[in-house]
Length: 402
Ligand code: PMP
Image (cartoon, rainbow, N blue to C red; front, top):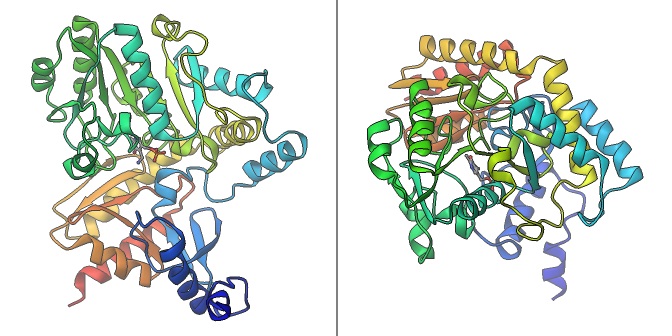
């Protein structure tokens, strides 16, 4: 027993490598093993960089998976959290709180939507939208796209494409899955039994797929024709990621409901479901709720993060740096395809991408592979040309290695 205790004394002084090894060993027995973790222990972040327990610096092209849009530990987000934490961290949605209302007003102004419901994650925002669609239409069928990702809770999982994610958890209410960016296939699948069509403006987890602008406009019309709700899942595409405030702006459509999370609150967990007035009112008191949703601390962080995106012109920067990244990749990398919008970039390679992720990490670059052949790059929007150059150089070196 004594010996066992010694191995879990995680605070004992030791080198970074020892700490990492010890944490990895204890994690296996203390945390449910649903993640494949890379062998580094991250302890600090600033801008587009993070540091591990050995003091090694990495350029972060994962950004908490498209979360840290304003960069790690942005000063004004940290300050807003510090100030709010001294006043009130949490209370209940039984009471009014000012930050939640200010944030709802801010999101309305940014998106043109009419009402906000606050929750704590992307999957929860999708749950809220699917529930709203059921109540608004009195129907239950959902149409989603092949290679979609909308979350892993029992409701959202039914709209997530990867069969491997869904199969162990049946019965689920599963969507009809149609090819993405194909208006005809969508029109054929949607009927007067459809409660909602749910689409990502740019597919993220599925490998960064950008549809033609007319696709989302066609989807809007198809939904109108059948009386189905049109839900845009902007969990990954929101808050400047694609070079616009929201992905829907690339095609100029307005959904009935819109889901947000990831980049909303500077790294704190938050989700939001925005709805048009025409459907939001079907939710009556008691129809939906969240203990933590829209709490004062996370809402303060979201207001500060949105303020930083605006003041530092990070939406424009995402567009500019995204162009630069894609052009540098096209010049320097032997790729099958380089695609994306803003700083949501996919690089399709003939090579084994998980292996490239490992080699890049050893050279101080954090990358993510959405499959064996696609690298996804979603750096903080504050990323600079020098950092982009470094990442492209490292990738080129890896490609030229035996
Ligand atoms: N929708 C989309 C488009 C996403 O990319 C994700 C997360 N990758 C989710 C929903 C689920 O978000 P969360 O992990 O916060 O539940």
